[in-house]
Image 1 (cartoon, rainbow over the protein chains, first blue to last red):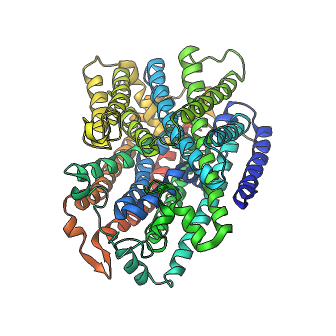
Image 2 (cartoon, rainbow over the protein chains, first blue to last red):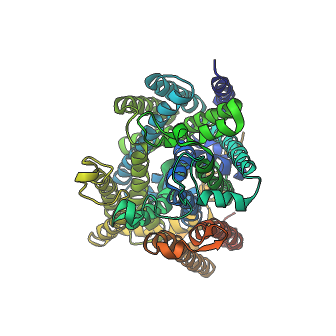
Image 3 (cartoon, chains in turn orange, yellow):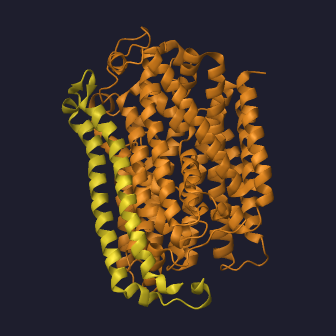
Length: 524
Length: 103
């Protein structure tokens, strides 16, 4: 048995203990869906960071910076700045006016059934794409790190995630995120420390080496600090720079529409704690992404090319961080970083499953099909547990069907684009625009959702490949986000005023800005 | 909580001059701050994409304008969060006084 496997089993044992503890505290819907709204600011900040820093960001970004230099670092910047949108615009009104899901805020003064049905569809779309990306990544990484085959690895991750979600609910999911965030930060600190030690703790030496990065003498030196190695005109053609702008827009506006991030703000007692949890998350996420400077750029100065290429000579972006750990810290550190990567994937898929099943049970089953009345007590939680099984099984199935070669970045890009184009416009309009009505919300959600999906399918990452792409950009945000806003606007002004919705705007405004009547924490 | 027993007159609360003042203060800050951070943030990909030569200028050893500007985004975000929390703490007091007669 490898050391990585032992460390990973240690993490699994600890999280299963937490799940067991949480399962005993899970009484009622508020406990199951929102951890009894008893999570504190710093705990939720860590959990938000844990939910957000996926395998794509830890393994993917360090690989991207190692091979494409500065242009990869642009992701790091966007991932943090995105939280200003969450802090200023979304977190507090959502906490004050909602209950379990993003759709609660929208359904407040609009016609609940069509709005919840569309919002639930959008939530399930974002969560499923994001989850398949994580599952595929998990299968590939586990195969490299622990030696388990792709299909059993995906099934194993799926079963564990279901145990957390089905038995432990939001409380267990939250603590899995917190532990994972702490492990990830510890790993990133150590990795950065060892890189700086390699360069004699001199920033001058470090940046000098990065400006002449030669992969330990195995490649022509190139200046990785200079932008343009991925999106520059010389590499990506005339559309490259616009693609970079579009990527930035998608990152900075997509985060505030990601359902698994939004539901985290329901786990705290009030809007003030929601605010402080975003600040905690920003501190942690910011420090983490600044450290990608060291283990991303640094890898290009330390690792030989042969170590980080696949057998057919392509960059193996996912393996850069673990291999760097192996070179600098030996087998034990490699095992630790591998276990952290595994924990990261597991925590993120658990968060995604939680938000998808909450949305289906609360929005679709209870409110669309049963008009907001629970027939039997505990029914909503039961439906959520069944949904978690279905969502888990479907994602496992699709991930195995697509196989290890599917482009995970494509799926994550799709999730961010849908979140920014469909979810964010309607969240903003429903809180800040009195005239906004049901037709506008349905138009915004459906146009945002379809335009993001269609543009990605037509992009160089989509159906027809680079050569046959009809839409020239890899990132659709610059077109699909304005389309989402425009559709929500036109859908509203081209249909008759909804006086009932407008009369409830006073109530929503007072609730959103004062917290009067907001859902309370349950005593425990 | 009284708001769960007797119905709250939301219209009256919303029409209170102190609530109107709070909302317009909040709107001014949030709109201004959003315009600022979006411009500051989007300036990075625009400058990097369309003015690469300017961004490749070295400012400290091998460190160039592009990297310094990217790093500054992190501090911009943190300062923004710090300022927002300070301002929002003041709003909390106004919000509490608007609904003080509801308890």
